[in-house]
Image (cartoon, rainbow over the protein chains, first blue to last red):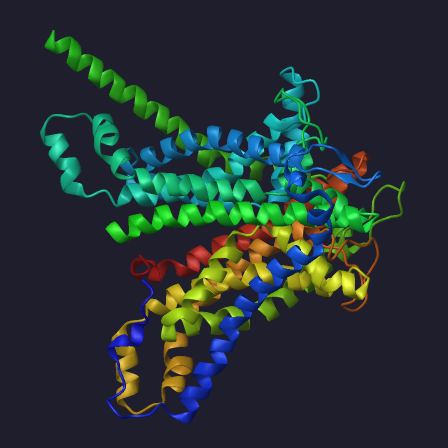
Length: 300
Length: 283
């Protein structure tokens, strides 16, 4: 996967690279380097801007839960908790839905129908998150209130919106993985008299397990960092509440809400520290996802 | 006995597939529900005046979002101008010369950046440009959006260049054409359609981004001037209007969402239809 296409066209032994070619190669290597530079600058900026917070509160910043910008006391636990809980809720809802949809689209639906439905699912991924948040505020929140949630906004509402945001990722990746299941394996089981569902359960799903786990991690990475839709429906309350119907807060949401109005340097630094933590989390989760999907690619 | 078992297995089979069909219906029906609801809510506030006027002062009904539409076009356009050369040429490097430790690092960085939440990219734009200049600006918003675009365009370009058959390269090289000319004038145009579509899709994606703009472009209720002042953008206006307490602003948020959604849909559908003839080779 990482070999260049031109490997087959090696220069003859003893030949030199032309001056123009060399210049071109170095120039485009420079363009490619911009992304390296940006990544390094991003990490450095976040680290240096948040240094004050790490110095003042140490790592305890991550597990204390007082958030009081007026007194310059900061603890990020409520936001970590909110991000984790809303993302896990989203996975809980979206994974069965997405895997089920992918099974239907690969194993049962006629090809034409599957294509049309996949098109709709892929377009769902293109819907801007601010629009999903808008739907959340004016459709989902009143609905939740009608169903008995005291505020309408809250952890569960955020989890629901997030579920619809990651559903397309889970469905598309799972479908791609299911399509790689070798036909002979399935046919062997059909030959033994298995029903379609038994083939799905006994062959297709087990064979695709690492790919599906990869899809789940990739979606988790998206859910953790999702900002707008969550900010609009989670309730923005920096307290840890046991009930999922109570308003909470997430890491991305607190940055979105407070950064532009951060009054003190300490406040700003604490928000950047949350950003750095969020970035570290997503890099870890995405790394795990890539590992899973890479294993699958190696097997293919 | 055997008959009973067989019936049971068939029933499980049917039940499970009915269940997966429901999942598929929910997954694909969501888009229709969203589109229908936005069209229904947004259409009533949509008018020519809405598209061509500035927002009215607080408390006055009416007004439009002309400045947001122009602002979005400016910010996203500049982001595209910054990201496209870096992404495409970087992608050319990865596809044509991409071996060794340097290319591995670039690929790795692109994957990391692709996963970084857009709000964190916004933080970066804030720390990099807004803080030193002590002002929110269109420029800082564009830089943030460009940083989101580059890794998408980069990896997409690399993928499409890899689909160009080796024989085309060999044919050109065998004629004695220098490698840089082969790359720029033979290989790049061959993959051009895929690369362009990828760039367009990336543009549509960042056009809907709000999080990186909240504390870079910031928003503005008037016409902006130049690149160094706060600027209104469509997604940010939707956000501000949606969380405001005014009914009139809520209606305008729906109308603005309808416009944004139409733009995003148009680009996505066009890209897919346009790519279709060559889609047989892309898998």
